[in-house]
Every structure is written in structure tokens, then in C-alpha cells.
Length: 523
Image (tube, rainbow, N blue to C red; front, side):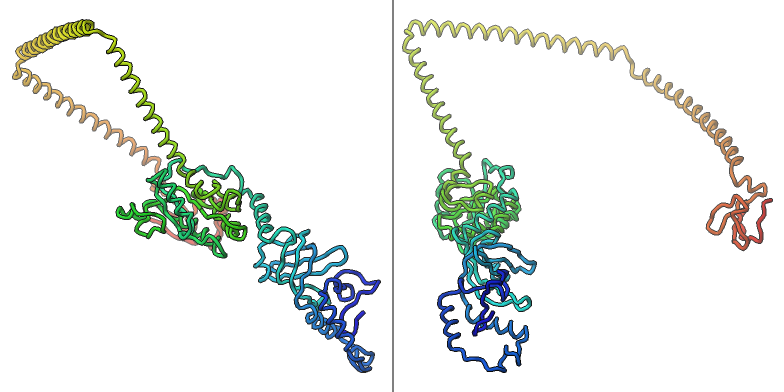
């Protein structure tokens, strides 16, 4: 039923499906709106007999629903409603439709695309929310609905809820799996740092790396690490480092010694980086919200270079930390992790150097002890014995050298005598005449063999030509036969393959003729 203000009241037999006849909004309406409705009801004059809604001037459905919509929108233009989401559905247009309910009633809610895009979390069934909006009437169905402007989750905040939802979704997709994590290069030559150049984080990283690994190059991409542009700026830095090609631009030797805490100009781009470091200092959940962005998480997962995440303090965890190949508790810890292998080698070298020095000192101490224990007489005797052994060894080597030299000279003399004897026994003039006679005989024999081979091949060729002529189709044609072809050069072997009026071509021994078939027969 309707009151004097045109508001819908709930009767005992009405249902609770959200229609004009079935929804009672008074329990959810603000106190001020209810007082305004009662005042307008008391001040409303009694309608005349011919006013709209009387028997003589009944309402049309459209006019009645439109009038109700105007009253409802005026009375409930801005309010907050608390309830639980059910039947949540996102339309292809981007609008979100759901039902807000509690234990006593339910209310359809529509969240248009522009407002839905501003939400930090995704509405889902069973979520308790606080909705701000205005009440209206959907005229096509005569249905009361709440047009939402914004939603806030009850309990956890919107940022925390969005964080948990995105974390669960990416975990399901496998972006947090340890199997896809790539190991960091043990000895990186260049590191790409994505951070703000105005904070203390970059200075801490540079200080630690210069102390632990002074030859490590740092290439800084200045990024926005807080605010709405944070995720876009950091993702752009990741894509930029992945697009750098090795030796793209020659390094500037004069600039290599300068500090790298600023973005390097194009002339200082010295090649591809080995890994990417994303760094930011600590902050609240709102400050770190840019690193809980889905687009940034997918940019990190798609990076061809290993990514180290050093965001916030040790107790701060972001989506970027879970997707990155390695998460460092702080930016300073990240700098130590990157240079850990180099630092361990330096420590190992220092330890080995200390061991060698200790060993040398120990050997010197033993030598001094042995030298102190010997007397002068014993030292002289040992020196004499050592000199005698060295002299004997020298005499032995001299005798062996003389023997080897004599054997070599004798062998060379014997070889020279044998060569001279063979030369005397063989007169070059006689050997030349003999060689000439052998050459003439070989030449004559070769000529005879060549003529014989040519004659045999000529005879074989004549016989093959005779056999070829006997088997050639042209030889058959010379005897008066002909080959008959159709117009498409298909050979006719049977008269049934031709038909009257068909053009045929007959090939003779010399030339060909074209004819037209008049008739065909079997013989």
C-alpha cells in the first residue's frame, strides 16, 4: 500500500523480493529521512476527488512508478547501507550487480563501471560491506534498487582485502611457485636498480656495493615508488631493462668513475644488466599499495632477467616480493645478497693469504732451528761432501757429452762415405740414355693401345647404332606406318577411342597430317 507521500509500505502478505510492493526500506533509512517523510505526510493536503489516483483519474503505471522514483530519490539521495553481498555478477559492460542482504531483508544494488573501476578489491559473495549510494527505482521492473557510489569492506580494509584477493589469485596461477624462481648470477657485472633517486635507499645501496664489490656497475632507472603512478613507473623500468641489448652504446671511460646514483645518460649505457633490483624504504600499507598491483606482478613474472625485490622493512610483504625471484628483507640486505659471492671470494683469498704467511713463518722457524743445532765443523763437512758430489756429477756429465759427440760424428762420416760410393757407381750420362729409351718405348706402346681402344669403341658404337635403328619407332614409320594422336596429344590405340567429327593428327616418317574422323569401325 502507499502512504500520502507515495512511499511503499510493507503489508503482512507482501514478500521480500525487492519490488515496490514487497520492500520496506524504513528500517535502513536514516533517522533524518524518516522525520522528513513524517513531516511531509502530516503537511500533505487531502487530495480532491478528481486528483491522480482517484477513481475518476487513475494513475498510469509509468506515471506512478516515475512519481515514486522521484520521491524515493529525493528522500534517500545519500546514505550508507550495511549488509552482505550475494548473487554478485559482473556484466560484460563493466557494471557490477549484486544483492545486499541481512537476516531480515535484501536490496538489489548496481555499481556502474566507472565506480567499479575505482574499487581496490573485487566484490564477491559472502563479503560484508558498507555501501554508500542513493536509492532509486528501476522503472522497467518496478524494482527498488540502490545505486552504489563506493564500497568499503567491513572488518579488513579495502587495501588489505584487495591484497589478499590478488595474492590468492596469483598463487592459484602459479606465479609464486619456487620452480619458476631463477637463481641470481654469482658474479654480476651490472645491476639495474629501480628506485627513487631522492631517497636514502639508493645511497645505502651504493655505499654497501662500493664497500663489498667496487667493480660492480649500477644502472639506475628513476621510478615513482609511491602513489598512483608507482606500479606503472616500476613496470616501465622492468621492461626498459629487458629491452637493453649488450654493447648497445659504448661506455664513456670518463664517466665510469662517477657515482651511479643518478640515471645514466644515453652515452653511459654500457650494456645489458645481469639482474634487476627493485628497492624502496618502509611505509604503511597505503604507501606500499603500488607494489601490490597485478600489472606490476605480471611484469616481474614476464621479465627475462632475474628480479630481486627489496621493498619496505623485514616485516613488510608485498605481491612483488612473492613474484620476484628473490626477496630481500631490506634494500641494504639486497645489496649484500647481490655481492655475497664476490665478498665470499675476497674473504677466502684473505684467509688463504693468512695461511700461506703462517706456513712461511713456520718453515723459516724450522730452518732457523736446524741451523742453530749444527756446529761449524759439521757445516764444513757437509759443504765439502756436497761440493764433492757436485764435482763427480759434473765429470760424469762431461764424459757422457764427449761420448755422444763422438758417436754422432762417426755416424755422419759413415753416411757421407756411403753416399759418395753410390754416386761413383752410377754414371749420370748412362742413366739418362737408359731413361730416354724407356720413354720412347712407353710412348710407342701408349700410341698402340690408344689406337686399339678407339677402334674397339668405334665398332661398339656402330653395332649399338644399328640395334637402336632397328628398335626405333621411326624405323617402323619408314615402313609406312603412322602414329595417330587426338587433339590433346593422346595416342590412339583403339578405334573406339575416336568418334566421328573428332580432329586427329597422324605422325608419319617425315612430318604429320591432321584429319577429321568420318566414321569408326572394328576392322
